[in-house]
Amino acid sequence: MSPTSPEHDDAPGDPALPLLYQMVYCSRAAAGVDDAEVDRIVETSRRSNPERDITGLLVFGSGLFFQWIEGPRDTMSALLQRIRADARHLDFTPLSESEEVRERVFPAWDMERVSSAELRDVLLDALGSATDARNAQALGLMLAHLESGPLSALGEA
Image 1 (tube, helix red, strand yellow):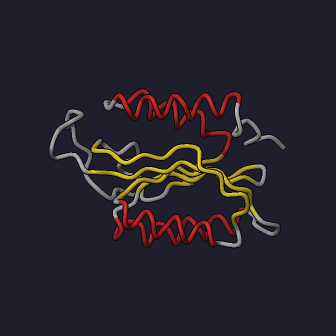
Image 2 (spheres, helix red, strand yellow):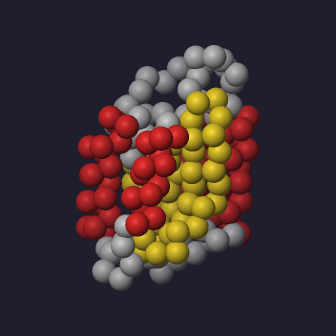
Image 3 (tube, helix red, strand yellow):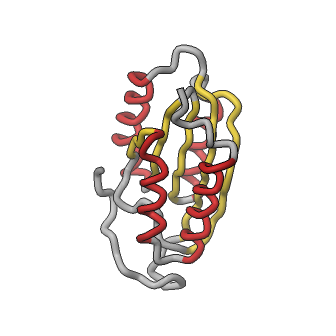
């Protein structure tokens, strides 16, 4: 994990908290996308995300991408356009998006790759440390998606 901004204990609604745009999506990997290619995506993100003030996590398993990213609307919009146009991503499917003043869910992750086997634990850990009720609700929804919805195939052979 690489810190991009200091963690703080600001209460929800604190005027010092940033206006963040958040997107959670899934997409299907194009033929030929393997772990090495995903590692290249993560390394590129780690170089560019800090200067854009974007944080998040990326999960890749069973030919599916799952990503939670957050940052300023303008930079997020540009990033999402690039992802949608990227030939490595097929069937881009937004699961959740919002823009609000709140704490970051993954404040110290410029882009962390998480295995599909670790995703549930990462989301549970984030839920356990969330002080913002909206983040807790979003994490709960992601866990529900993981358990029974469109993400249930992640990690299956």
